[in-house]
Image (cartoon, rainbow, N blue to C red; front, side, top):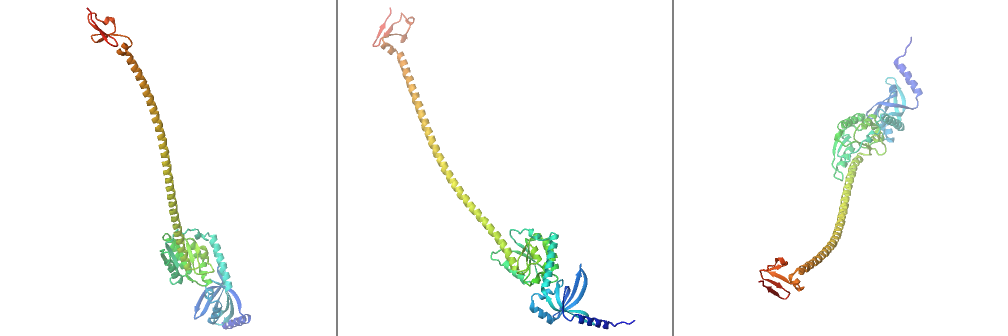
Length: 406
């Protein structure tokens, strides 16, 4: 039974591939891993079905071709060549007798990757919705004034210093306590380190009023790391508001959408905080002014009320004085009249009494033609009282007559 040497078989394979793949072909695959060396990019490609790998191949992007593609999309090429991305690439299919199949990358279609990213974003959002984690952080409430802030950023991020300077050197002399939790803001460690920082903050969330996630600017694909389900799910469980400012002016990550507030840049995050405190101060000053105005209005109103009350009291007092004066005059007049009447009555009675007394006056009796018998200095009214043995006098109006008895 005849057999082929391996080299012969591989040569047949090489020839078959060379005949059938004379022109480059477009393929789609997921980048399982990627490595760069001396400007050359080595990729392991895979195709999955239900998370199982059903096809796998190696691909290479030589340095010269990389530089050529870099001219067309300089800010995005390296981000496209990232593990986990689905890509559409144009490749030359080559087969080496010793090293086997190799796909040499000739061109890349960024739009395909963007589309795949959009689909993954949509799937991530739907998963968050299904698990009741979508925009849950928006249900938290900002403190009326912000003082203590937890910040997640990389140590070397330019956005970190922009945020810090703008926050601490604000025009209103607001002071803040800022605690930094350092994490990778791009690359394969981003998800793990950001989630770890968020977990640390959650465990001591009572220390802070706000969480801020910031990083410097970058290309559109820089946001891919923040489309992570784990990051957004962790944001949803933070019990205080989370602000995301990861430095992109036109696009938003899933983390942006799932946080309490999304801002474009770290500087904008600092402005948000300063403006929030400024709004609080303005409201407080407004309330203080309202209190002052209300107090002043109340003072003026009470002063007017007191003045009116004084006028009413004076008017009532004057009216009462007049009434009392009138009453006193009337009472005095009444007393005077009663006293006058009483005097007249008393005078009349006195005159009557005088007349009565006068009518009883012995001299008045004598004037009337009567006489009086006086014996021993006493008026003898009855005959039986007259002693015949004693002398007595008979008085007339004009004189008296002494009578002596024998």
